[in-house]
Length: 196
Image (tube, rainbow, N blue to C red; front, side):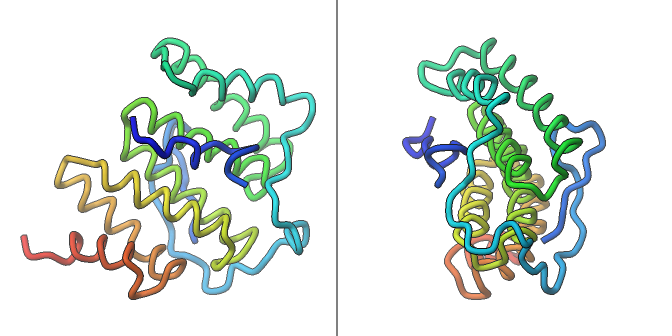
């Protein structure tokens, strides 16, 4: 487990395409990023992650408690199921591009990371980067933070074919969010464009 766990925690510590899921367990495929995702009216001037609705706070607190070392795999698996359920409820109530839904999906990325699934975690963060870009814009700190988490998780993917495929998905997002010459873009580009 890395020492930067706290950067993954929505609602408290963590102050452009969308993924479509086949089974809602992890994001699966991406569409091209919109040229100008714009900013949702509710996001204008907002610089803090809003807390979850009061009726969900105890449920989310229980999930995040399962993510604190020492990690109990059974408790973490139960937290993963609960996070998926809350994701479905938030999506139905608020929509995919609402900060509550985005935050619970960030939480799902964190859980995937803790479960030792860096590719799934990277895909969750790639997904939330697209959502953040839609809500906040490409240059917002929340968007950039999600992009950074996606790259960090991608670095943990050890299977060369999976690393290459995931890198190909990350690269267009990184070019849009961090720029053509950012360290993250160049690192992923070096893998994706290296001769076989």
